[in-house]
Amino acid sequence: MTIDSEAVKRLRENPGARYFVASLAALGIDYAVTLALYYLTGLNLSAAAAIAFFLVGAMFYLVHEFWTFRHASSRFSARRMTANLGVLVLSGAVRVAIIAALEWAQTPAGIWVSAYFAAGVGGSFITNYLLNRHFVFRR
Image (cartoon, rainbow, N blue to C red):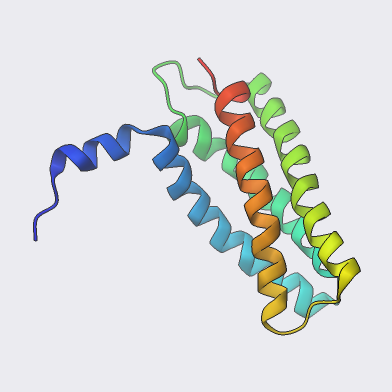
C-alpha cells in the first residue's frame, strides 16, 4: 500500500491536522502526569488535571509557535506567549469545571477516572484550538 504524497503534504500544511498531532503528544504527557499526581499524591482528579494541564500547556507554546501554527514570521513572541497562557487559563478552567462537576456528582473510581478526564479533555481541546487558531496565532 502506498501513501499518496500529495495527501500527506496537504495534511502537513493543515494547521488543524498539525494541532491534532501536537495535541495527541501533549495529551499523552498530560494524562500520564495527571494519573501520577492523582494516584501518587492523593490529590483529587480536578486538581491533578489542572496542574498537569498547565505544566504541559505552557511547554507546548513553542510547539504551536514553530510547528502547529507556523508562519514565515514565526519567532518567539512575548505577546503570543502571554495570549497562549491566557488561552490555557480559559481552556484549563473549562477542563477543571467539567471534571469537578462530574466529581461532585460521583467520586470517580476505576475506569471512571479516565472517563472524567476524557470529558474534560474534550471541552478544553475545543476551547484551546478555537482560541489559539483564531486569536493567538492568527496572522
